[in-house]
Length: 159
Image 1 (cartoon, rainbow, N blue to C red):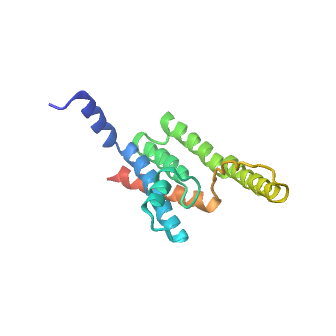
Image 2: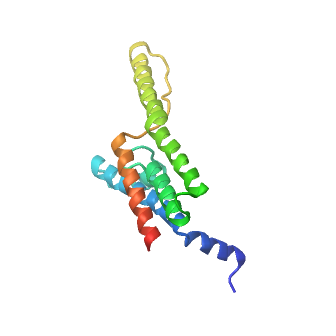
Image 3: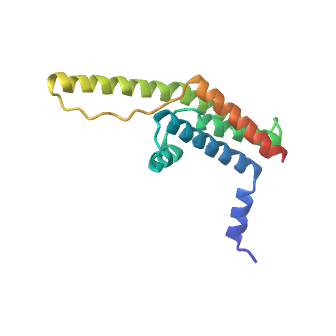
């Protein structure tokens, strides 16, 4: 007889909402890793794994894909009038807005600071430690992520 923990885990990973959200994130990150490898002509597996699990920004947006899949799957599972769907819809809008706006602006500001710091270092010898450049998303990256998440959630919901 399976343990209670195993039963709970099986219930979680066989849930269409979980599967839609997980696979939309994973496929978006996998596509991002492949696109990045082609673009940079990198064949190192370390670069692929780093992109797959840690890279933010890039095509497609895994943020947008995941939250869209979550809202879509919850809409199919519980109905569009469900409080869960409403919660996930507005959570998704917030995440997408953040990916497009705040994170993108912060990333662009970090790039400008790093260029300025490097120039100060080169011209005046000022010690400079670069700041982390957080990558936000373009509208195209978010749009592709939204479409990917919607279609993956639809596939898991109608199976």
